[in-house]
Image 1: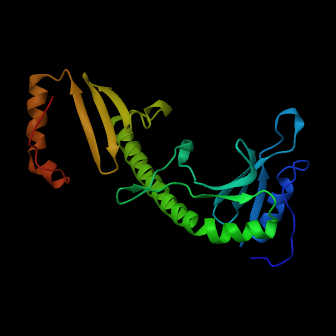
Image 2 (image 1 turned 90 degrees about the vertical axis):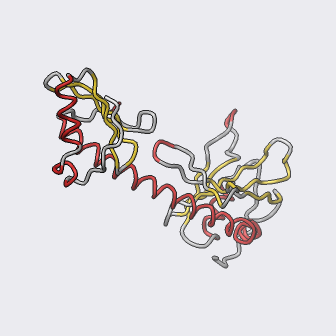
Image 3 (image 1 turned 180 degrees about the vertical axis):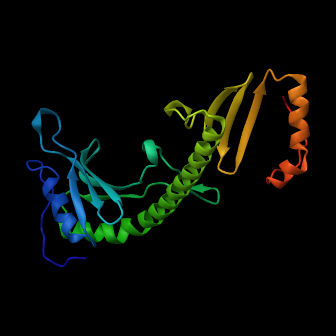
Length: 229
């Protein structure tokens, strides 16, 4: 932590910006201060964020909250997945929440920085690491699934369209080729679900025979146990 003396305190007249700026220089690492902007009637901002540049770790600060006029609330703000989706993480049966602390509104920046480092950062770093790992896992899954969907789309001659992606948790494709139509759903990156509509008896029997053939088995398929055509 930077040891330069800093006695900046929160002020209603100046808002939270000076305190955020002071804390950004006192916390370990490189941080950027991001005030939320002025409140109604042009009052200075009473809320804002501190974001660590190395990894996007973020803290949210809020002053003058209802019923807490003498406190500044500081909370960890968990990263979001693509599309702003919240990612929950668990340890056993316990869902990890976002840690938070309250500090006295009259405390100076150095004292608040010490409180953050001692009381907030350890638990917040733990949740941050767990959430980031889950987000990274999800991004790898979606990338692998999208690659499979592209391969399937090319194989059936049905180029992917924006609305084909992630409908009901899957990627859906439709095809209509030589009087055979159906749908393909890709829920996972390692399997594909097919449904065929209005297939003639001869073609249905031919398809079943192929699925049970050595050629199909050599392509890496599992044994056919049930067919819903």
